[in-house]
Length: 303
Ligand SMILES: Cc1cc2nc3c(=O)[nH]c(=O)nc-3n(C[C@H](O)[C@H](O)[C@H](O)COP(=O)(O)OP(=O)(O)OC[C@H]3O[C@@H](n4cnc5c(N)ncnc54)[C@H](O)[C@@H]3O)c2cc1C
Image 1: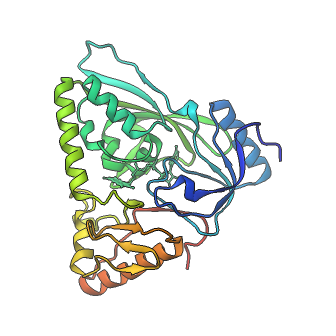
Image 2: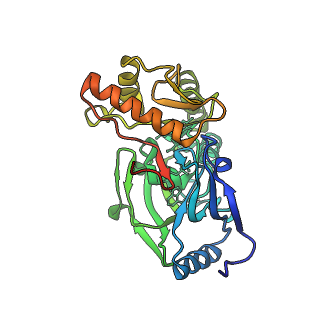
């Protein structure tokens, strides 16, 4: 294999790259810093028939205990950019964000510069690319376009009218999102700051952020999906008496029933077994099948 120099590691533990702190080694792990590096990596992987996966902040990802075969890509420094494209006197702000940019970095700038509506993303962990792929907090409403590189290294642009966003999902062409164009209304910075602070206070009072997790384990069932993240599925899990249920070191949070937390040494198997237990109990009690919101990385998902 002739990988491009400098950005490649072997047997990199994915537990270091997921908020769950769970996951065995990636056979190959690369953090390309430029588009050229990324394209070269993908071309080499395609040439060698090496499967490619991508991880962003890893905050919605459950990685397999035995690791991941092939190449795992995590966008490096050169993809953590943010550029304002609009002029200060325009009523809306247009920004281009590298897909590796931390979502909270964007929120921080919004508070400082008066970019409106970003309170919806306040406290949301992870990166912009992951948020777009997950349509986290319905970020799709602000997306004007994306640039994506496909597995053979071809770069393409997709405009707003070619993209479809759904509840916790985006219908994107296969590939790695490299950057995203976002448009927000311009507001007074004091107003942006106040709204963001209020959203952070609310999040801190409702979510379990003290222990490692991947946020909500399950999507809200379709009839409840219009509601705020996690409320519907969380209530069903709570009413099924599952708060505090535990398998190994994976536990249903006492604070937010749709969060599964890692008490210290939880494995992917622990989390999956607990998720299956929750699905069974909720189905028995309410006849509703909960669908995972966390994305699985690795090879243990068809049991
Ligand atoms: C404490 C906590 C609270 C949370 N609260 C919320 C919440 O309120 N609302 C909400 O919606 N979510 C929430 N989440 C879930 C998660 O933070 C979001 O989904 C987040 O936007 C995921 O971003 P990420 O970069 O971590 O994605 P990752 O977990 O790294 O990836 C998610 C998916 O996107 C893919 N992906 C990532 N980057 C790229 C890329 N550049 N190109 C192509 N594919 C890519 C991955 O392969 C994976 O399939 C929470 C999570 C935690 C831990």
